[in-house]
Amino acid sequence: MFKRLLRTDDNLTSFIVRITVALVMLPHGAQKLLGLFGGYGFKATMGYFTSQGTPAILAFLVIFTESIGSLLILFGFTTRIWAAMLTVIMLVAMNIHSANGFFMNWGGTQAGEGFEYHLLVIGINIALIIKGAGRWSADRQLSR
Image 1 (cartoon, one colour):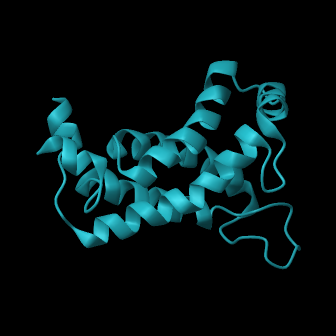
Image 2 (cartoon, rainbow, N blue to C red; image 1 turned 45 degrees about the vertical axis):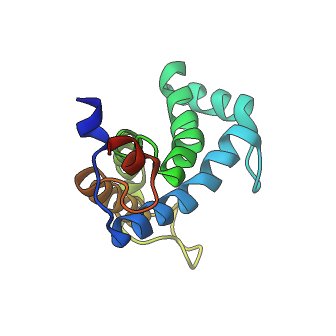
């Protein structure tokens, strides 16, 4: 079962998709976990999520998945698991942001950000769930 979960091909496209989503999501995780890139760090992020009604375990899983999970996707280790976790996070975020419409708030005229970014991340993660980590991944090495 575990070997099947890791199975992937030597596909360059899967590698590009994997690196792209990891490099986009990792800074978001670093904001939440470490306070980098203008983020608030672990304690403040946990406080914010739980004050909004998010159970502490789910808040922790969001922070862990966006930071450590993104790093593991970067290396291509258990990629399908982390891509699935990010998909769930993005579905929830998409639901929250849907009140602001589809588009990002480039002009600063909306009440908040739309959900187009979340939809893109979901699509990328679904591709990883289907195809796997691709070329130069730990999953490929472990499944041989």
